Length: 350
Image 1 (cartoon, rainbow, N blue to C red):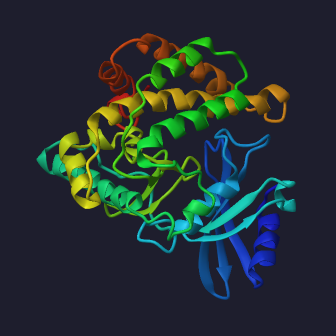
Image 2 (cartoon, rainbow, N blue to C red; image 1 turned 180 degrees about the vertical axis):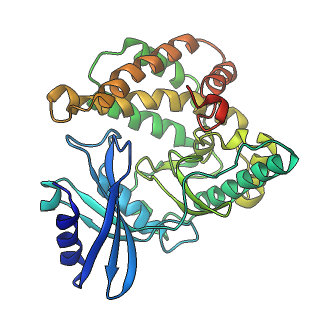
């Protein structure tokens, strides 16, 4: 059981000093992985840490925790803002052998108060925030992947032209490995999407995989840390704009993309962006369905695992079924309408 006493003993063992855990709290919902915020006193100085471990039965996203840790560790020396990674523990006793990573706590919040206030000043602020996000993505997408060591452990497309094909093949393998049901419509949708795979990309970039509002740490309208790296991959940077959690609706989408393109030094193909908007819906199926397996085995009885791994997946399956055979740009518009930002007040109830 993770409690104040066990955390104090754990941190003392790793930090080799007189560490007192003054308080801790678990963040929620924490369905895929469990995350604890830990505050300490160390020789009169205060410290703050984030303790992250797999949930019972494993995470929802079919990605090892060590992979996320290695991504953050590789990014920390770069211009991309991330929390300082401190250590990875493969089989610690405190979690009965579930892996743990610990990083330093960053002062900020994943919420931006007043973001959707009315008036011209508020609208201008939203556009500035979208530009801030665009600049941070540009810094990520222009990293030299060989120089930063990511080519050592991140699966790399053979070329920029093959980014979509490589991602498609990788996720088809994951789908075969983790699915709990046949999902014939999802399979049919995969063959339909395969016919529309983009055959070009501006470069092979390290992509975050899931980003935007609710995913990053903000302070004074600036990103102080990009968080949630479990779905990071090497591929077409257009994919990160396809799942950017409302960033393209904060202000004028074209202005935001042009700001990004100026910072990055290359253009985002709008047709590729349309494809990836639909592709991200498909990828959600194996991602969420993977989390259902521990529920079915009894390892993790939390009902949200059932709701996401089967109920939510069935919604995605129905959405894909509606789009099969349509032009990709039309399908992308359906996705954009269906996936309106959950962070806007008018969508809070949904």
